[in-house]
Length: 302
Image (cartoon, rainbow, N blue to C red; front, side):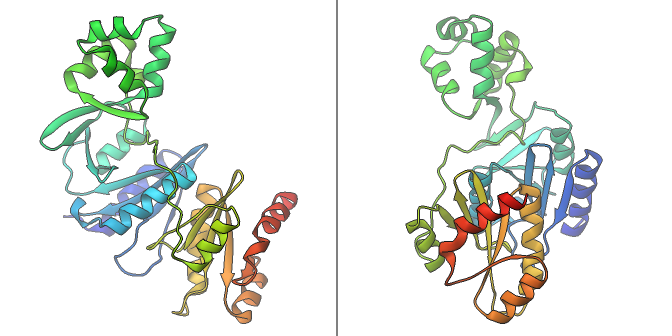
């Protein structure tokens, strides 16, 4: 076993060799961390959790990855050392897990991967591309169903999801008729879930009441993600461990790669003043109503 640090080195090498900008996330300290690497290239954004074994990813880490994905249209990936093969995807509560070899194939544009679920093998199909290719070729759902050997209802269901897993023999026939563009690789990730707003935290509750949908993250330097109009806001709150500036720096890595505005929420004037001296956007915890004003000002400055 390589160990997670070696695994992260491999992931970093793969992403950089494919011209991704990447940042390693070093907060929280220790092993309990939802995001190890964020990477971006053009409009592609990826958040990666690296583990030796897929069962080491727990429910809070999966939850953070999903929330980040829904709020920011970022692809969440688990890269696991135990996965053998460059064309295999395992699913962990809806998140794709692949090997480093699989990651290399995926970022190079390869689409044919086999999904293992409950002892069966499937292939992922991009529903949007399936419908586009069928309509471009002028084939009715009924005719496609006949050629593939499924029902018209099945074709309808395939086209009205985001990514669908189909049996290997069905995928082969779909590709034969429509072409390989309908295949979906592990980085083709589209969630149909809605952002789960948080109502237990005082900050999140206040923002949600202001009409700014907000959810919380548990194991990242970012404490909250908010959506205001077309803007993504990453909120980082002053911590009690005296590591606020490390936390801020790590939050900025996420905001820069995922394209959002990072705001520090300070409880003390000392932290607020120091953060402002370092050029950060800062609000006191009693000033959350000013978030729209901060966003508008940021747009004017940019």
